Amino acid sequence: MLNTRRLTFIAILGALSFVLMFFSFPIIPGADFLKVELSVLPVLLGLFLMDVKAAYQILILRTVLKLLLNNHGVNDVIGLPMNIVALGLFVTCFAVFARRRQSTKSLLLAGGIGTLSLTAAMLFLNYVYAMPLYATFANFDIAKHIGTSTYLVGMVLPFNLVQGALFTLATVIILLPHKRLFRRIMDDAQ
Image (cartoon, rainbow, N blue to C red):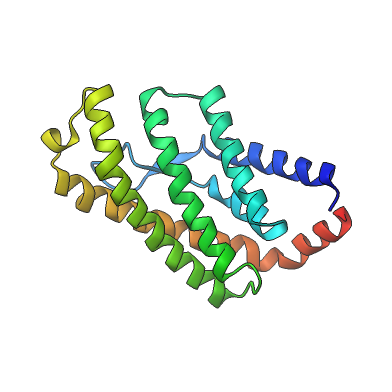
């Protein structure tokens, strides 16, 4: 693929991923601040159309756009680095387990491992990174107001498991029926 076309695809998918960040919804009652948004789908599309490097570039581009154009202060400054790590792990699982052979079984396997990876990462990062930073910079001590175990086990854990399952389901629904179309797009681009 020509470098100009590659950069164009990355820019388009990065912009689409950024736009998808505006459409979010809560899934855990009592934790309205934990919202699912499907901005990972263009990142995964970039992985399957190009490569893992392009997927990471799309992920970084949508994050930079979010920080520059739609920053919500301390929540984004604390949350987006964690989001990059978690989604980076999720995408890496798809790169390792499903990129070469895009079958339902390989996509579900990659999604399952990716979901467990992103959930473990978010549990760890919330405990060692987000909770102390929110207490320091947002003057909101999660351990005191909600409780550490209630927050991590009752909110973060189920949220990320459901979120990963939704990401996996959406990827299977979008990728498998349109696999030939995506291949044709990439063949035409070369």
